[in-house]
Image (cartoon, rainbow over all chains, first blue to last red; front, side):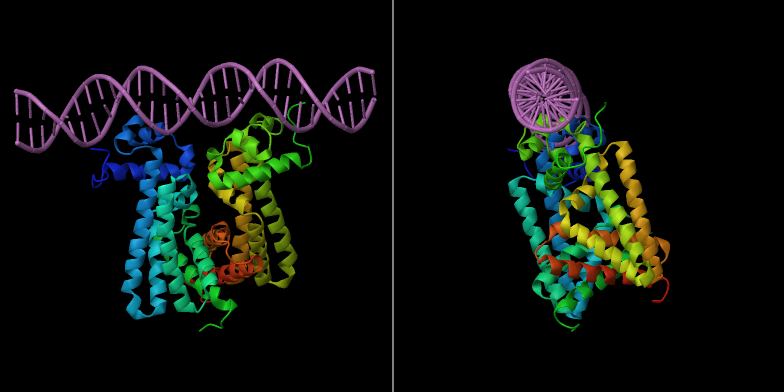
Length: 199
Length: 199
DNA sequence: CGGCCTGGTTATCGCTTGTTAACCTCCAAT
DNA sequence: ATTGGAGGTTAACAAGCGATAACCAGGCCG
C-alpha cells in the first residue's frame, strides 16, 4: 500500500502543530527537516514516516486550516441567517477573531508560506480561501450595502486587521477579542460609505 | 578601506528594489543569491561588490524602510499638530496608506522576514518600529481617549488592516486609498469604546 | 510463537547554497 | 599613457539541505 492518508490523528497532527510554530517564526524555508525532528524529540528522517516530503507537510497544514476556516465559517453564518444580515456578519467576525486568537501560528503561516506550496495543494487552498471570502462578501453586502469590489477589498482589510493578533498580543484574550470585534465591525460599516448612504 | 556605506544610490538601491520584490514573493530564504543575480541581469557573485553578504542586503532594506516610515510619520504628525488631535491621526493614517500602496513589497518583507535579520540590524529595526508605534499610540489616545494598551493593540490592528493591501489590490489606487483610510479611522474610533464613552 | 505494521534509528548521497578567490574590463582622473 | 577603482566574470569550496536506504524495537493479532 502506498503512503496513505488515514491515520486519523495524533502523531501526524502533533507534527503539524509544532511545525506550524516553527514555520511561523522562521518561515518554511528557514526551518530544516533536522530542526523539525529536533523539535519533536526525534531525528529529522523520522518525519518521512508521516509525510512524503517537506512540502506535503506544509500542504496538509494549510489545506487543513483553510478547510476548517471555511467549514466553520459556513456553519456559523448559516446558523445566524435567521437573525438578519447584521447577525451573519457578527457571526463571521466572531468566528474569525476566535480562530485567530486560538491559532496565531497557523494564521501567520497561511499567508506567509502559501507560495511555497506545490501547485496542487496551492490550488486547493486558494479555492477554499476564495469560497471563504465569498461568504464574507455576501454578508458584507447584505449588511452594509457596499458594492462588490468594496466588499471584497474590505473583507481582505478586515482579515489583515484580525490577523494582526500575532504581532501585538498584549491585552488579555477576552479583551483582545472584544477589541478586534469592535474594530472589525466599525471598519466594515465604514467600507460602504463610498457609494450608498448607510442603508 | 573596508566595504563602505556611501555610494549614494542607484546600484545598491536598485538591487534592494528587485530583492524586495523577490523576497516578498518567496521569502528571504526562498531566494538564492543566484536568483538575485539573475533578476539583476548579472551573476550571483556580483552582489558581493555591493553588500557584505545576503543578510546585510536584507538589513539595508529593512533599516531603510523603517527609517523612512518613522521619519515621514514623525514629520507629518508634527506638521498637523496645530490642527488638533484628529488631524494628527488623519495625517498618520494618510501617510501609512500612501506608503503601503506605493511599496507593497517592502511592507510584506518587513514583517515577514524580520526574524531573518542579524541581531544588530534586527535591534535597530525594532527600535524604529517601536518609536513609530509610539507616535500612533499618542495620537490615538489624544484623539479617542483610549487607554494605552487599547491604543497599542489598536495601532497594530490598523497596521494589519492597511498592510493587507498586497493581498487584495483590485480597486483603483485612489479608491483603495480612500477605502482604507475610511476603514482605518472608523476602526480606531471604535477602539476606545471599551472604557470611556466617546469623548 | 511468529509475523508484521508503526515509528523510530544511523549512514549516506547528491544537489543547492552562501561565500571566496583570482582574474578581466571599462572609464575617469592624474 | 597609466593607474586604479568600480563592477563584473568564472571556478571552486565547505556546509547544509532534502531525501533515501537499510536496519531495529516493540506491541498487537492470528
